[in-house]
Image (cartoon, rainbow over all chains, first blue to last red; front, side):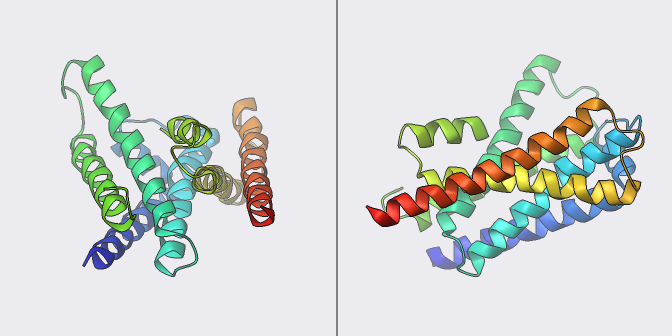
Length: 134
Length: 79
């Protein structure tokens, strides 16, 4: 059962990361705009493709390698937990500095839920899958 | 958060290969995205000095992570 849960987390992680890769890589300016960013020049397009398309493609590859047994699952869960944990930590700090969600787009508000869920799932899968971690 | 994992690995709370995987995925992904963007842009036209420097930084980060992983695994297989 714990094995299936971990596999499910990895599959969800792969799908989410590939979707992010595709959307940000295909239309970086539109992707940035949904996040409240403006791409000013080709350097901005480069940064969106690196930070979102390339980075999330690498995370998907780590999850796929773990699912195929080429990497320890523990490594993939730490990578997922670090990514989503870092994202939600940054968002919470930003929420405090902004004094609330005023001015945030629906995409940004949704990312609070997505990143929290991603972190919780990665942490749960790590605890269940790693002997002695729980 | 990546800094926290690397620090935890230095303190022995997280295994070193996991920290190297994390660094490799991070810098490898960034570098891959920059290479794809370079191909789509057909060159460095319009890139600032910062973006150009990030090609070197991300490339070096990837090489260092892979080298550290290989050296660490060699050392642990010897002992």
